[in-house]
Image (cartoon, rainbow, N blue to C red):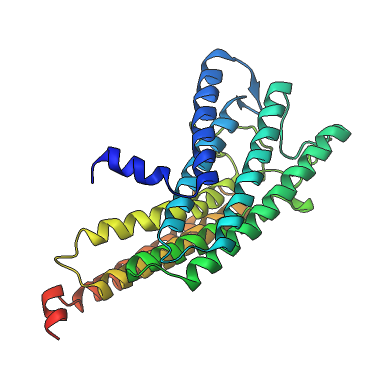
Length: 310
């Protein structure tokens, strides 16, 4: 399939989601220009960086959801309506974020005025509605899975782990996470104020814990696991479907464990690149367990031609 054909096929996926993809792609370009042309800095980062990251993330998210809906053997009106709700919530969220950038203030945790408080509440409401709509789509996809078992497992795990990615963000808005700073009602960082030294582009704290890391990793299971399924599919001449599905499951379990591990590390106020012995031990255990399960699965695999003969 040529790239032109693939683009034409994608254009016929869920239309509201694809409109969101186009809108977020355009917004990403605008934000990229803002990063160059606008020298303002907010909480230690270029003021247009947040909407740039959100627009790119939402474009990927909407593209993946639209692709997943296209895999359904039969149309699901419930899933399509839930996807339209997600589009509406995403547009509201981005409108608030961009509006606050234009006003020169933060969009999250901002309790410095009645208007800012109202916008924070609106953001929280859109996230809750988006979570429910995402869950509804997950149920629809589980009820009508793709015929390919590996793809079906990738979709199910991707949807489920992205929900986990949303849930691990909950501590960011808990009262106990709010720093002792007037007008601030929450934080990404643990043990240090937001806006301190951070990793390039993503801005994750290098001096304290950062809850955005587990959130980011969990959310992008939606793309990572289907990509893995596609790569495994290319090994179909060496691996039978059962083995590919088992490997995908192992990867999904490891991915979920990694999301939880990263969140646990952040909640302990520990920077990503400065893990203590306990975090290193947990990471090593996860790596060894995943490698062992993978090796055992490959050792017991059957070649496709033998599986067909059986």
